[in-house]
Image (cartoon, one colour):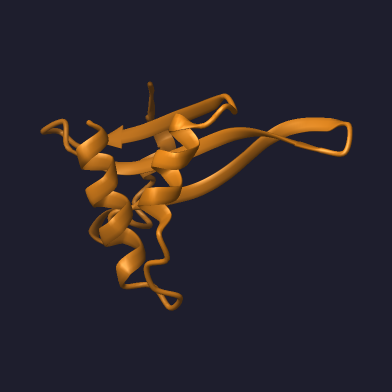
Length: 89
């Protein structure tokens, strides 16, 4: 599933106003880092990844919380409520 997520992230960011800027590599680095991470995916009827969100733990000063980034949805699935039924990995 990680390969599907990488493909999704790359394609989702490639055609944005800001373009692709290493978001898939950021996801990999966060997964492999020391911080706790939580990933949520949305799957279509054929179990293909159509959406992905990564939350990672971060501390600023003495406050620890979760950072949401990156958040990706396949272009053809945007604005269809894809986040309504996520599967938590």
